[in-house]
Length: 308
Image (cartoon, rainbow, N blue to C red):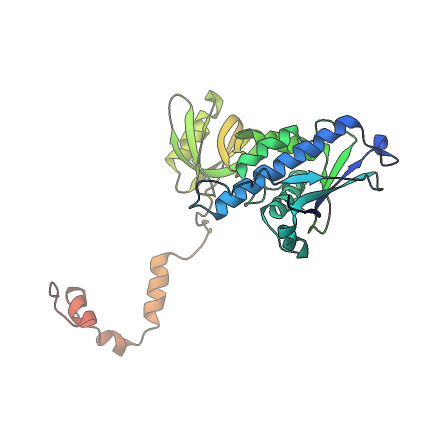
């Protein structure tokens, strides 16, 4: 039997009144099991991403991932989690990182993203998000579970807010209030319309009869007249992009994004051209061939029209 050793993976710190004296209720050990599963599935996804030509994980990839803790340290209740390794893997303890270390880092980053209302890290595997549904179930609203990967510089606070946000991200979509301005691309007599917004995507919705006149006018003059829409939007969980208007509360006309603004009293373009021409010396105009428009190819490109 090969000799074994252990190295740090991460620390979990339980904070709250019932963890005073660094005690841990038995049911809270479920959080350690849930955390291990998230790390394992994340590491598996990372390995597959790095080895697209391999159909199977390395032998014992999953079975060799063992976590232990042998003490509860002070600081509320601090649980130092250590990986059990065979002695020929101890090179990892010299700072070399593998998929499990990267998974622990990404879990910290995902928790911070949820707590700060920002997007999940791009490299966090989307198929792992649902596992957060089992992580934190034994915690009360006033309790926080802090995670910190062994190479991390700070703890990630798995607060009730972070738990709620990650639970929302488990679904394919979520809803939130929205206000956007765009160009009306389509509107039907059945009340359906689509709006081209700044990100270049088309967002569909349904307007009511009271909003019909403004929507149709914005469609008719779509090149210069935009439509500002307020209401409830449906967003993609992974990319946070607006998918559709679940409800349209208000519409109003606005300038089309990117459309040139009309400036009252601006000089007529032909007047500007006349002014430019007046600055050219008369002898320069006399040198311009009278048949320039007929001999463009010959005079500019050096060959007669139609020749190659």
